[in-house]
Image (cartoon, rainbow, N blue to C red):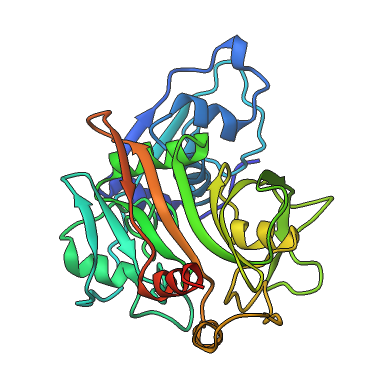
Length: 335
């Protein structure tokens, strides 16, 4: 069904500076394929999310008429045109917030994000974020992440520290996003958890979706959510009981490690959402004080590996946990 959006709006869009993708007439072999899937296979330089957004906003024309139905089944001879408008200028203010830049070139940045730094602006929190800092640090960022998330390819929770890659241009953003979608990105985290997980090395699998009773939380769910897979490896065990583990992500769901490891019975130390204070035994007072004063989950993105979007070089970065986490680990090792 043709969308009845105002043609004046369409004409204004078409007169704006944008890139136009005109596809050849659809062949018989593709007849019956869903429009959104056909577009994704025909325009690999655009992410599926980006294409769906363009479709919803009326930037896709079917036989010269604006069209928005992603479930439409294409027919032989159909002609498609996709208009890609330039990125909207952001109204987010640049802020001089110090950044720990691990690596930088013309296409990307790798940042060691501190705990407590929110990734991007959101209602009620439009300043003091990584995006605000990036806008001050960089003269231009990839616009594909949208006006509120320029340059961001992935994210870490506010109180999770560690490595984040940021795209400086749209080509880098597309390439890196595809690697995340294809699950070829290497991501490893270091965590302190309650208890001694058994076995020492294992994979946790379980769909992650919204908690059935608390919509602000995620949970392992049976009949909904998205597939998620995490591998943990116990590096050391301590009195308490507590353990130091590494976690490798095979998928990238919201709060994945926090949810999976808590579901396994070993929540992260300091996690205010998925964990709770536990009675710890046989620990020195200074260690108990450090744990009591821990107000964020003890989770750090230690390793980040990917293929450079332009050179094709294999890039791999490692960053040890920050002072709050390192101090607690050292105290436990000295018991």
